[in-house]
Length: 259
Image (cartoon, rainbow, N blue to C red):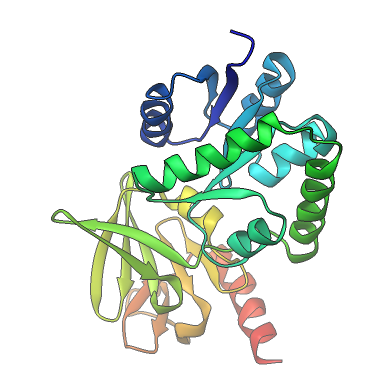
């Protein structure tokens, strides 16, 4: 039907895409034309499918949401609803630019509210207003750099809570999961080290070993253990493994923080 809103879903997490699809399928006015699991695929599908509405994850491998917009061009973008885990810079920027967002995890009511706003934007003549907002958002993003996530969602025994990243001492790899060490407690997160590293502020968190990311503000000293292995001693006394090749970059980063 001509009045159907052609919609594309972009998120690198299959479960997240399924959740958005489930909610959209309950709306008779939505035509889901495709899905993408990464930014590169998203750019291709936007050009090929020309959707009216785009649900776009902010943090993705290869190209993130901002880079997707930059690659496609603001003048060629559909109406955008951002899907994000950030609650600091990203949300303020979206609100200033009058673009809508869904903060993970979102409920059905919030989704319906956002979808109705998006529907109204699709039906209105854009006359370049959206283009200018997207271009302004990209400038803010470029000026600031990739925003670091402020909180990390943790699911524990059926309870969902949000761990502030500034309270994390260090992060440990555990196969396809990660362990957040914070205040003497350990929380298991269903996210890989690589994925989590991409979401953290590199000015605060640094990969110091294939199995460890450390909060630079928690580092007390660097030393060799009794086996002559490099280790980091944190302010709480915990010891974190340090790769020999990472010691010099770590020392430089720590020196920069004291200047």
